[in-house]
Length: 515
Image (cartoon, rainbow, N blue to C red; front, top):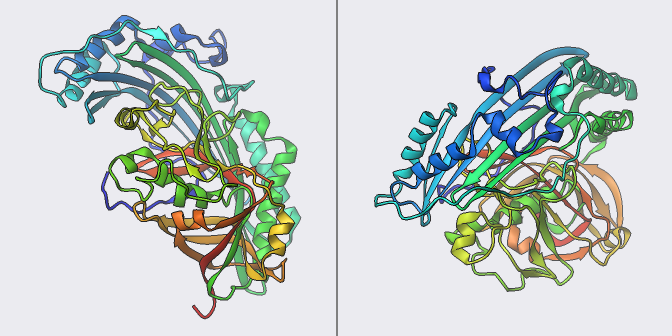
């Protein structure tokens, strides 16, 4: 990764950017769910082997090819990804498309060096050829034996009843129409709507030279709306979405109503919004989606690859105090049905709940296989990749701050003048120094201990580690953002979630009027 990389775009996605459809290999024709086929909900390891048209013997032969030039480790990551997206604008479907991605990525490690290759052809000859390409990272006689494969059982943190492959487009369109109709009905100032729906299913099979073989079935879905309102010639826009590793049951009538209501209320609120005074002031971060600041300004700096290369300001902070004793921050892949949860990471490791900061002390980075070996610790289940075409990197999953000892109203009452930031969008962070700029999407002025007028067009500017030190109050109202976030790093995007309680930072620079 470029050491000067400093852009951290972290945007809610309204659909997946996909190319044209790809034909499935004929070997999969008997493995898809449907009449006469096994449901993916009951798939076992042999079903995954059949799904990808491989045997354990073939996998071991490909791994051996990867180790043929002296590498010390090899793994195979098979993925079959099916995505569907629909968009409805002003009650008309204006976009509907699908994409299928299928292949295997082959990684060879030689110390901390990585050789990587991938192929969409999973025939033994093609995989062995790709393995030889990855093997070129090393240049010596083979020195590692391929261990016999034994299945690593994984938990199931995203139980579903109906696979997305069994849900027709005719079942999805009414969901979008219901949100669209509700949005227009809620306020006569709404002049335009856009409603979107995306579902993704991934079949994953993993094997490595240490004898681990594991599989995972990963569902994903997201539905949301944005709207434009007009009042006296002024227009405003806002939106809301709900996402998770769920099936269609997530999108109940109550949830559809809430999406419409949140989108409309968040939009018309902006007609009355003002800009605060500019300068340093207390900033209260709302529970839930304002955790993006925690994710971007602090969480990325705790990913172990940045620290292994001494690029993060946290590189020398393990075991040291970085926050008040009531501040604890975790990254957790085990929250049921959460957007960023995983049954296993993309290196076949057990996912877990990892304390990065515990009682104010920095206790752990987020590790993949390479960084864990470097630091002499166990992987934390944070080795993630966008697809089989990408190498794994240490990445966050669901990152949040634990509840603290204060109450929400107590926090507001402690502020004479400041801002309450409820949600953010569009930010930049320099990982090394931790400097950030974020745009406050929605919030309020705090005056004499009370929320008063809504605010808009506000930037906050600060430093992540300093903000962490300047957290002076943490409430007991933890919420997780229910939106679908796509986290970018190293040219890859992966689903991630975040959350936090209401938090008071003693001072952050706010860009407002008279700036």
